[in-house]
Image 1 (cartoon, rainbow, N blue to C red):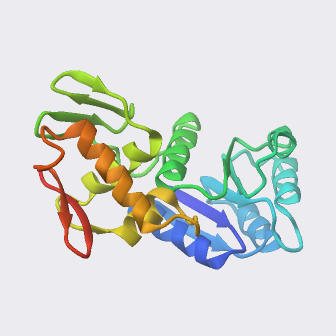
Image 2 (image 1 turned 90 degrees about the vertical axis):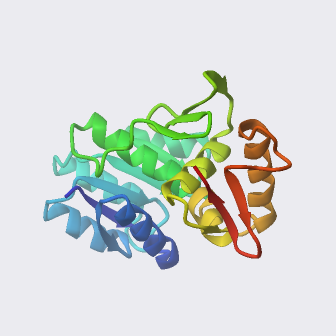
Length: 228
């Protein structure tokens, strides 16, 4: 099993990432600070690291530098609230492989994790299904493309992630809270109305009659489900 080390001092975020990654078939370990994370990484057996930069004590920059100085070349996905260009350049210059700015969607992070593992030639959990279909819609998760009756449909990244989140449930209901957490990550300012607005856009783009949807259905007072 592919093993991922998450070094993150926000334990709510860390445990959320642990759940999301484990649901994708990865093994996950959590380190609450830079010192503990570096010690664990130096023991070996880790295939990829998700590393917060702003850590107490030993910050992520120093963890990454120490890791590379020891000749450990596992992929490192930097996770931070700092989005300035200089921070990205600094992280990449000392050995980061990718960079995600908080707040983020967990599906985006998982896609980046898979891409890093593929580039490193490591197993990346269960393979994504090649094609998903419902009605006249065809979805390719690997290429993130959608076709309706053979014609390409342009979805925004959030719309596509929301569609994938519904498809993954195989007809089960996704509550608004669950969908917010999975697609939009840990954005406190995002409200459940955001899910409703994006569902309305998906229906407009994918349903034969958006006012009487056949596939993307509302479950009253709960959330949404996708009927094939």
